[in-house]
View 1: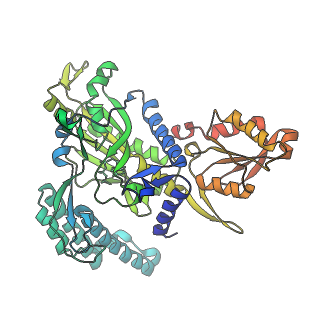
View 2: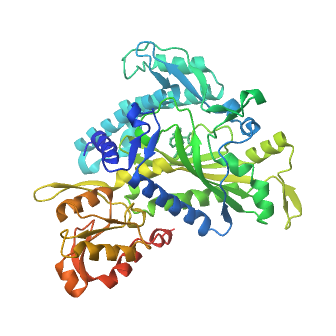
View 3: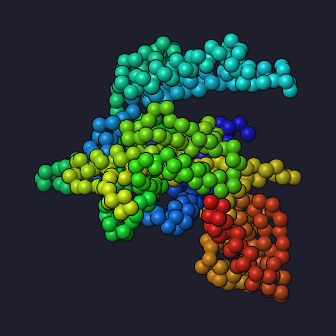
Length: 511
Ligand code: ATP
């Protein structure tokens, strides 16, 4: 399927089947803000549970917290967000559209990379089995020229960003003849910095209003509670604090559905360590996090690491885990080595000591931090993108979401074959027994075939049909989503058959 089509279909599917709705849709929506529907919220909760258990339950030294969205404004001064959490913006004067200058340049680089791939594909066809890709790329004059262009643009761009030389960033755009995708023109404004934090007022104006921010990341809630958790939990290094919660960023280019939203959810973990051990822990968490994504069982080539060229103001090293979305490889999680930057800053701004006394070495120091920071909404989108399939059957096409069973929104659908002869009653009786163990759904409308299709489309792994034979011998037909196989099983065995397949343990044991 063409990837652009797949993306459009996914967005339509999310709406049609109650996964995701545009926020305030009846008022024509609010840009880059989305609501999760009845099936979306279940999938989202299951992802959160999978993450929480992987982090907090499987790692004895990791504990969780739930800090408030509003924090003292000085937190964001200390963290560097007031001064440095900016995007460089540029406007096209003809289309009046606003862009992130860094994104325009990165997309331009991607286009040059695509030209290299094209040359490689052509040559591979020409040379057949004897084709040596690396050799070709390093010796072919065209690919050499493209690579040189990429190198020059990237080096200059990183330098300009670091020096905050916005005039040169604009010059890069002009000199490379980057045009506005909407107007096609090169009529650009200057590049300006734009802070991504939303602010609001605390208290009534009469009390003397104070500007506070909606947190742009959950991490700072962990840093400011470091001492509380360390002391009350009597935690010894290394230890981690995990948190799931909403974050807010005034994203300028809010496209690509739930990939870039203004209100989104993060799952973050800060791992506090002894200084000097950061490389070891960085590598450990990098691998652990990749494993978490891959344990869901989708094609491993859909994921890759990407090392940051430009580091955030706090970072010593940073890798992203990227997923191959229908619109290309993009970040879903960041693993960052944050040194003692945050705790030292809070120590400085609050005047409270953030030091840890190490019993073994008898010294005090500010711990270093390795952070794992995943976006819930982007992870949600990876699952839907990988799970969505259109299968050609004899007379129709079935759309199926092959979501890993433990994460599926509804685990079991229960159907009476017809709406009479006591079949609905028996179906509900079965459901009443099973509903304590799994999310069940009862349906009696339409043909069994149509009911199967509806549940395929939301990823329900098991459907059972109660028919007249069920009343005679206490058996039902169970039908499996992925294989469409059906078999007759005793009602009393249902619980065991299904329970073991929907157990999160299946994913957790792979970690
Ligand atoms: P990007 O470069 O795509 O803006 P980022 O590097 O700013 O992302 P981080 O600050 O590292 O992102 O945030 C950690 C995670 O939070 C990201 O990997 C992503 O999954 C998620 N995230 C960040 N911004 C958004 C957003 N606007 N909408 C949805 N998820 C987001």
